[in-house]
Length: 390
Image 1 (cartoon, rainbow, N blue to C red):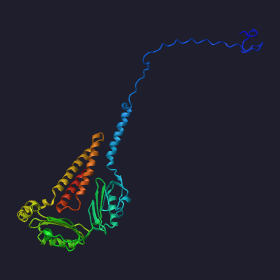
Image 2: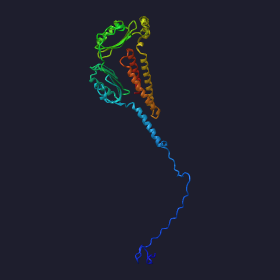
Image 3: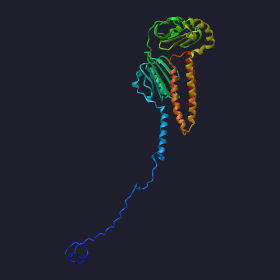
Image 4: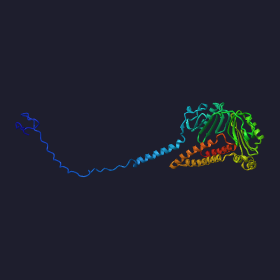
């Protein structure tokens, strides 16, 4: 190139003759882009492929199924979990040893009654707990069988334990002592039909012209037996049933009597007029009662000692338990792929818990001899049935 100042030919960035800077070559001009014509109407946007909503994607559907199965399994297993029981919060807890497990259900927690169902208790744990209860003083008038225990302590608290080996459940029932005071023996026809007991310390319940219920304290088993003999001498010797600690009979006029030794030197006395006499007008009581007495002795017998509602409730319990055992057999034979069985299982276990609770409540300490015998008969049949799925 030539130097623009001295016209010397050279190569490089500086002229060797005069030292002037070489001229910079001009960059070629970029051609001007033609102006886009103005657009009218909505702009044209680039097309993009639409994505599937999350809820339609395969991985999301699989997660939902897994979550549903988890919930179902949690519900079915929750039956055996139970709530946490804080023993220090039990009102009468200090009277008993702490159970071997702190999971279960609190049915009642008051100064009058403590009622708990403890789950996941082995047979050895139940037997150990029973011995601990004895060490706590529950040894008075003890009645112990394979799966049940009853006894009083010196204060008069009554303890009942029931153990189910099949469900590994321990039921604890603790009652406060009964409160007694001096009483006046009931007057009227009902009171006159019976001998006056040796002790007049106790309490009277449900007193009316058609009968009453009384609890008499300070009555050891010897005095109880003597009172039963005195009742028989007073005419209560028809259609009688006598067991250890209980006596029921009628007199010639159809009055019904039940006397029971309930423990802790206490007996209960329940007398009631014939059903015809209870419903008849005041002036017509005695005649129909005399006419109806032979029919009652022929047709009623022990049947009248069982309340129809009580029998219906017990029969309903037994019917459900038979259905429960049949279902559990089917459930155990399944391979776990039938989700409807899981749902039915949760429903069945819920009903089982309710039926078991209702059945226990039937034995409230006021059953007649016939009712108690029928209760134990059904309980025995159900226990044998449950062995089929143990």
